[in-house]
Image (tube, rainbow, N blue to C red):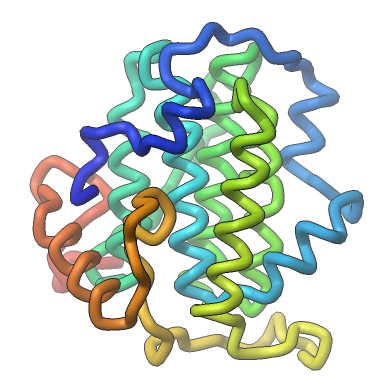
Length: 243
């Protein structure tokens, strides 16, 4: 589980690898993932209960679901993979990451059942990264669209649903949110510092035999980050180069 070269068994079980692109997609559907509005209060409430670093880990895991769904359908999957690597790095070594900029000139193809979902996913991740860098207390709510998108494109939705439900439950148990969003007053002007939160590793999300502990998670993510190539990944850097 130390790299993205092997498909997680749960993603394979959900038939997300190499499966034909057969789900519905149009502008109306796309808009629901860009702006989920208040139609998913149950999911929003569940996400509000997990910690900051847990939220970043869930973001990376959800993007990996999307990565494997499209890997055999597009030539640009390497870019998505590098963003996933940067997300994991941001959990333990945020100073080693660069902003996950995407489509700044708004000229990236965004229509159709291939380009559309990928565009939505990477734009969502970009916004989550922006909120992380700002220390926003509302980072968790930005994950809703990404979770709904990953579900929409999954061939076996019941498998994805169970994975997401179980994952959020375990994250709430081991890495709960350190603040109550309902008690925040004008939190847009406040900056949250997650440095004291325990880190979370990829194994937590995809290894069915993994038993969480703060120590094992820290060791696993350190090993993972150490294996990354800072020269070929444009979203990684040495601390002195970070922006």
